[in-house]
Image 1 (cartoon, rainbow, N blue to C red):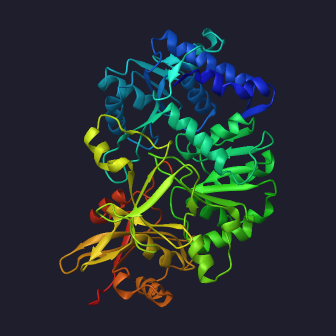
Image 2: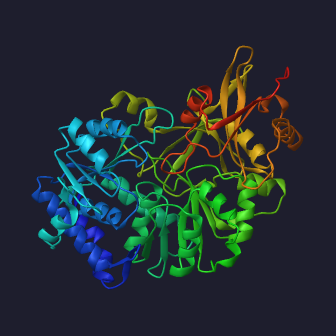
Image 3: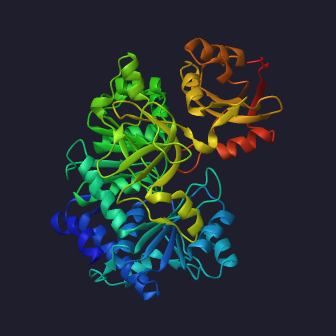
Length: 531
């Protein structure tokens, strides 16, 4: 099926041309202005020889150009390759080489990296800069001024690529996830189908999580409905609270780490947050006790969504009505889950032979649906293995109860096998996070001659809290009900945990750092018992 993407994405500019669209720092743009800038970008790329199916990489923090680039490339049929702002030049060179990108559009702070990329990768023939003096690069604003303002008249096939999104690389080399126009349209439709409240032009959506990730996917449905979008280029708890109050924000997407930091803000009660109607969260587990506290502070406005790079949100969702904070076992189990599967997706829990397990048993989460990526760029064997039988094998271990609530217990590669017993890191983290002095924790395996692996806990203590001894932390877990053989045998204290751009803990880095004697660790060995 062929269609004109410009006709699809320009609808709000036709319906609400004078409505506020983007607020970024001291700049404000209407829908008509953003639509015209996106048109000009599409034509500018065409005039540079970057037409339909050309691949163009982007590298910037959140900004108004984040919207313009997505919309302009969509209209022009250009394939976007978003780069991670935390990756090194070497990592990005590997990604650009693999993707076949011909140009790089970058924002402030990335000129040195862009020039290094260009010098080592001749295939990237154009560098386009915005937000700072362009120097030898092409200037973004000049290109827009000199380009046509008319709507691009480009047709694409729904199976054409609109984006190649590289995985975060938390478990290995990043892989280029291919996303088609059909995937994108189906994802937008899924957001509308699974919405628990009306998405309206009266909404104000605050974007602080990277727009290259889940926040960007959620921007499109709100864009199509004419909502206002307020953009922050980095997370700061005070700035976030001030912005919610000033702009009367109704919706936002936060990762659990951000929510925890907001809860620790010493003056959160001084801000008027009454405009907030929905806080979406996901990308990483949310400790139950901290989630209870968040509901008590912000009210019953939280919604958890489960998604992957290969199959974006929502795959499963825990609605605000299901965020019950009383302390009976059923409510606690539900809060620890990621909810029930969303409409438009099928989910199964299977064993190593791809056979369904019984309710309550742990297995790998596999899924399928129309918004699932068709596979990985240049990796046919990996695609065949991970998509075997027509189902995406997520690498997430989970279980589903009798009521069909899905609980994610670990990444398959993060599971610890100690003395022949499986230890799921998330299970141990839940007990550690219950300690009143613990801000956040991550559990990894540590090589051991006797047991094969033992459990190592990496812990961040709340500012101002007295640091518990390792023995106190371990005894706390056991007293709370963690089996002794699953209790940490090593405790390491850190000021912060290594995270990727999307604020997800990178356990691959944590394992490497903890084994190399990284000075950011204050290591304490707990005496091993025989359990």
